[in-house]
Amino acid sequence: MKGLPRTISDKWLKTGVLLKHKGIAGCIPETQRYSEHRLRHMLDRYGSVVAKPATGTGGRGLMLLRKHRGGYSCHYYGRIKRVGSFRELARRVDRIRRHRSYLLQQAIQLASIGGRPVDYRVKTIRRSGRWRIRAIVGRLARPGLFVTNLCRGGLQLRANKAIRRSLSVNPARKIREMQRLTYQSASLLSRAFPGLDQLGFDYGLDTRGRVWMFEVNTKPK
Image 1 (cartoon, rainbow, N blue to C red):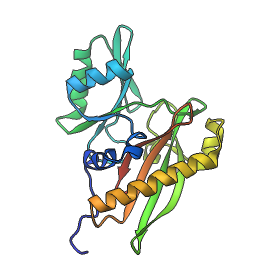
Image 2 (cartoon, rainbow, N blue to C red):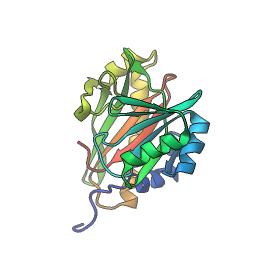
Image 3 (cartoon, helix red, strand yellow):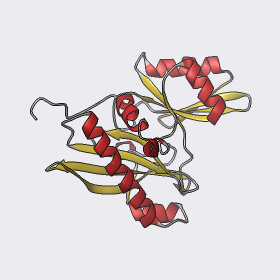
Image 4 (cartoon, one colour):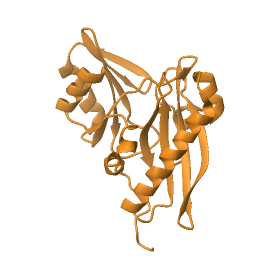
């Protein structure tokens, strides 16, 4: 299968494939291409929105945007900037975006350990036409950050330990749910983009234990 793509950098393309599957779509937070109109609408609806580059890994460029009584805030690389109007918020976002393509995603209140959010990375590889899960790990954010990426100071934990420490749920059941979503999604993506042979799925559990899928990387680290 020489010459077929092995990486798909555009997160919107991958999300679009998964949103066509009813069972998977219900596990993906609302995701839209960035525009000021969509940002205002999603902040009005959810109160908190994550803005992230349409391409890239490692948590680079992520912003947590919030609507407060009397203003807004932008959490970026550990610094929180409060502004009094949506217009000021949009200008700040534009300075950070620098004309790059961005996505907006409904922010999920993640289960946490000691006030630090935790999420999960599921790594898969394709061998002899079959997808296999190589690892499932928890990632605990560094104090003061909302991103959990290890390259941003996040701490890696065993998945069952992270679930047990952050929620009063059955860890095995939640891990099975992530595994099921991973196999379904990997099958859909490999049909849409032939040649993929590795995928990294980012999941989170909210404070009620619901599983959410945030994004898929075709060149996971």
